[in-house]
Amino acid sequence: MPVLRGERVVLREFRREDVDAIQAWVNNENITKYLAFALFPQSREETIEFVERQLYKKNSPREGIFVIALNDDPDLTYIGSVGLHNIDYRNRHCEIGIVIGREDLLGQGLGAEAIRLVLGFAFDFLNMHKVNIRTYEYNERGLRCYRRCGFREEGRVRQQRYYGGRYWDEILLGMTEEEFRSVRSGQPGCSVAPRCRSPDGSAPGGTTGLHFRSGLAGGGHELHQVHEGGNPARFRLEVSCREPGEHIGVLPRQDEVAPGCEEWGRPP
Image 1 (cartoon, rainbow, N blue to C red):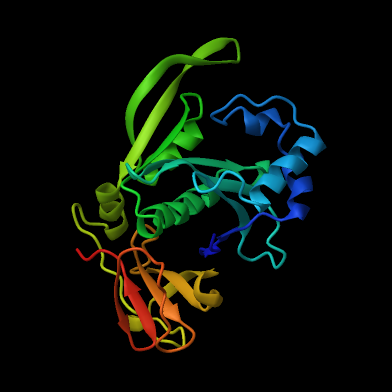
Image 2 (cartoon, rainbow, N blue to C red):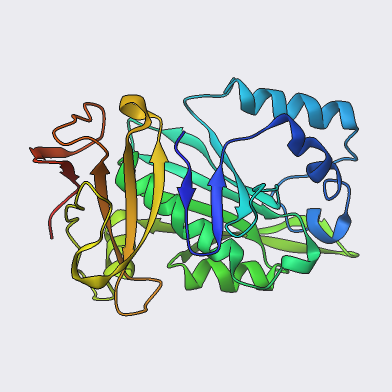
């Protein structure tokens, strides 16, 4: 998978040194009570096994999980993870799962930024039509985050989770591709067409760019999320080449090869 870079967070691949950081939260009830699956105490050996599965992508292509790290951390130390699960390429839908494993970083908007990055990956790169997420009704902070990102409540499974001496509903939320593009553009029913970035990496119009480097075509291409007008919910995607005329043959919905760069996506 590519590495996605935002303003404050980076979504990167798993590394073996992530085991200690995962063990620091995986048995912490203040973190695990919000996860959408029952989690029994996990040994270090089980955590190692989980990380090894991610290293070798044994669940691919129906699952892809990114490590969340802070952009200003030169070591890109693990602080959580966000992933796409149950990817259905025929019906073009999947489900997001996310955890921020450090209590001191909760409530700072880092999860929302990670979700927006992985949503862009799901809709623009994997060509998903719909992305779903689920949580429990006592996860008020998570629900606020998901709704700010554009998810809409679609239903409830009543009294699905027993926690704190009572039963709670499981809340199902979803976002379609059309809704994602509407939220991203800031205009209902409008989508923003991607533009081309010059080979030297400079962004047109004085905008600032977010980008990820891809391992495709020898790692010489970058996908940029360029924010406009200071609105973090409004951005467009750009793909640039390090070498003029390089061809990215596997990017979805590719339209044409321009001198020095590739432009791809769906026009408004």
